[in-house]
Length: 199
Image (cartoon, rainbow, N blue to C red; front, side, top):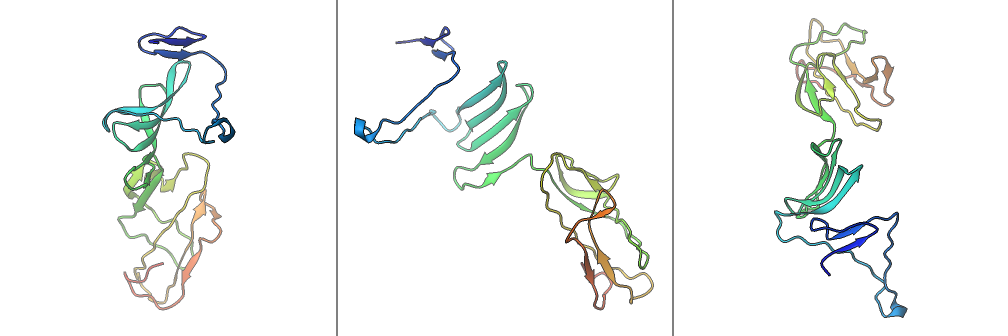
């Protein structure tokens, strides 16, 4: 049989074609002489070839799942069927998971921030070493969450004496410029050494 069409016409590009609302596969039971297991196997000729599932809306590809151009497992998404983004990559040799579109940044300030005694002062973080997906706005000194979720933040403050070594350093992270994030406040209460003491 060269072509098989169920509810639609098969052609050379799609020698098996089915138009239906549901499909069901079940394992042949041990009582029926089977093993009770069920495997659906797909195979490609070489690692450089493609193997996967194409998910479409209105015949426009929105997601690809499989092995594309290598033996690494990939989940790829698209808005228009032409530009694609890797959401998830699993290295088949190590099992290490990569999230290429993960929002993350590492920022720093390239000048001394003056902080008056007993005054909360926003530290100007105006540069980044990394800024994946452009989530950190250096011009306005803030991170903008691209999607709702849980995010992990950390910060390091380095003390530099201005006029008095008796000043003590404390810091905190705030949400939307005013609400202190629970558990983020810290303080160094012991003696400080200029450009050495860090919080």
